[in-house]
Length: 413
Ligand code: HEC
Image (cartoon, rainbow, N blue to C red; front, side, top):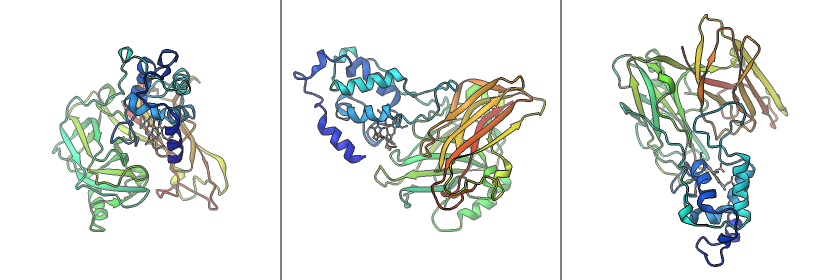
């Protein structure tokens, strides 16, 4: 990749070559045409010190990268938004339309012209907003990752509220944005805290290595408080939803550091929390997976398999309707496609999330533009497919070489 970028960089015009620059003849120019696309979909990550590794936040920084930018959007590697269009509408959608991709490509092809800065149109990336910060959870120390290229580490932090309350929003501030690839916050219920403390005490270094879950007990059952990945815009939960927290709980912050791009620096990520004692919609993050998969060989992905599929459907029959606010899919590194669908009892379907190009590095919680309802008697199905180029069968498990197929949704009722 670096070789490609270097090549491309030699090949493109210098940003300030104005007289020879075909700005006046080019149909597509930076100001007014390309800048708004890049601001909306790229500069959430491509700023100095950001996870994108290089900045694209000005004509001077973007023009030398024009050809690489065009290639990355045409192949749909960038921006890393994996939800297929046409499934449903999400908030803060940074994906590009075919027209926007064509516009960026034309700009690169025509020589990455600057145009007139007076024609600038700004479309800043979606920003997270938390209306109030009531508490801040902090990693117990600045942690310098050691395992390369990926270090997965769980830290146990105190839950500071002394009465039952509800988390109604959060905002994650990665301490070292260039290496923090994702965070999942799990709830350690009061009766689970001792087991987590024992795990934490196993070695001198704070925290413990963990992958795919908090690494203690029956991890699939671990309750989620929230998740963050680069570009995610967390903030206040939608529609008055709140996740209950009991006094005496703790929070497990699972960090995934990727050291392939950035310098290895210490990280001390923080998570701002808003909470309310009373909420309109008591909510919880509901995992969706076949209990039989967790049973040793229940989700077998045979050696050499291509596109092996497992699917699980469950019909809700509790005499209540449930509101769903978000959808998320989780597989490990062999995952290829995944989707979550809702089938109403009248036979109509609702697509919740469809991913055709799974990438472990780009997991995201997709927030529905409009919340959806699971009516009593409706069925939710999670489906995943995998390729297994290895010589051994793979099954459900928490290791990097194991797999999962887990949907999660924010439910309230
Ligand atoms: C959510 C964060 C994020 C956003 C948004 C994002 N990028 Fe990236 N980009 C990255 C990261 C991280 C890398 C390096 C690792 C990789 O390739 O996955 C990268 C790599 C690249 C590369 C070099 C490698 C390649 O795949 O070609 C280009 C070019 C690029 N981005 C362009 C863009 C453009 C153009 C946009 C907007 C349309 C964009 N990126 C949006 C995070 C992001």
